[in-house]
Image 1 (cartoon, rainbow, N blue to C red):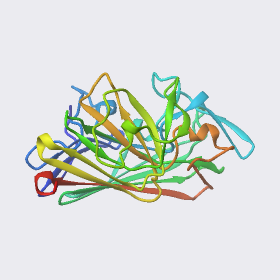
Image 2: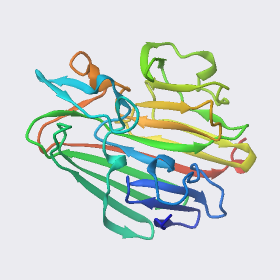
Image 3: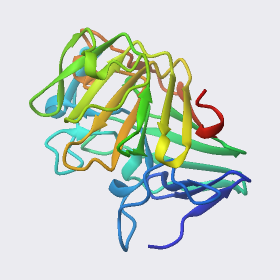
Image 4: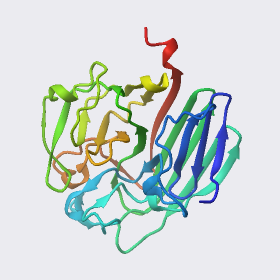
Length: 296
């Protein structure tokens, strides 16, 4: 795989690919990963990366269709999944607008297509300062009609036998066929992360609502932890932990509920309508710390 673009500080090293505006690897200066190490082999494949942006929508759109303002729109599936998933940004080639040792700005323009109503300009910036990595994502509606937009980030974190997660939320969505949300209810005991706890030993693919934007992951085996903070625009997260590969899990800050686009006319669920020229922004940061100095 060809080398990505490196950002380095005295504490962290992050490799980024313009393909998908994706983080390839993220580790401490002494080589301990705080994001899942790249899982691919030769040619870069964003599916195996450590983090990618979700724009102009996150998660799945049931039936690949939605309504807005009295008009019906369709989307084409963009993977082997039957539903359009995670938007276009993660599959696009972004251009470098600025690169310094501790900063990278990437952008891409989505042109008008026959299989999507979305026309937009997206921009993602990466800022590295000591042990803190900040990601900023923005989308501008450059089309001629108003449309619903959403943003999100899809990081993959290492999962060890002793990993704990703190990510308090108010409610969660159960899952139904098609990996779609079923019903919103009180959070089950084994996934109540209002206090630090291990991930349960089962499949997880659920949306959590009423999130404060604060989370913490601890890897005791590596004496390492990470504090997550997201701005108020990202008040939900998706938690994905497959039972077929327990080497990673995903905590995905999102501006909207999974499958919200399908139900937009009835309940926006966090989706924002952007008129031509309007912009939606979101910010997400990770700060790595030495757990052995902080666990008390």
